[in-house]
Length: 174
Image 1 (cartoon, rainbow, N blue to C red):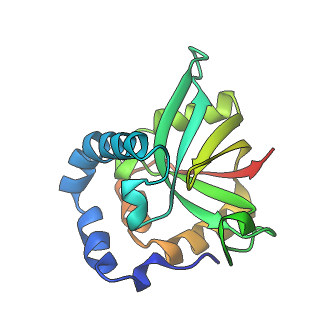
Image 2 (cartoon, helix red, strand yellow; image 1 turned 60 degrees about the vertical axis):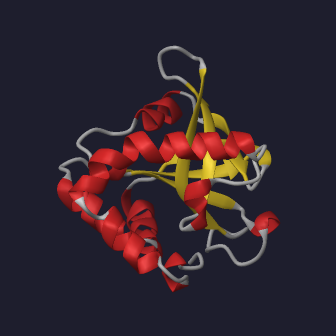
């Protein structure tokens, strides 16, 4: 399993705040905009939200338009064998992307983009990496979901708010 962010100072407070309905209403408009701005200003070296939870910038082709769409996303890095992140950035073998949409009703648009066009690119710690995405299902999804809840418990609150199953994607280097 990946290193749990909750061991860092202030993370428990962030987890409580991020589980509120107010956060779910405001965050989708504020967090990605701040992430994009800081990421651009630092030339890909800093992702603001990644100070609490690991994150990537996903570039995927739009499901209908085919145009590149850049989306800052939280992720759960996995080690080279898919068993959790152990070392530095080169030891990450795959990443789990979570279509929580902050516990809002609809699936986020980026998930439809990956379903239509699984070959994409992520920016991870300032490096562009070509990846392929795969939607997780069944026992594999269940196992990843358990690891994800240990990694960032607020995802349970997001799932409890919606009737849809939150989509989980494993992305691997191409």
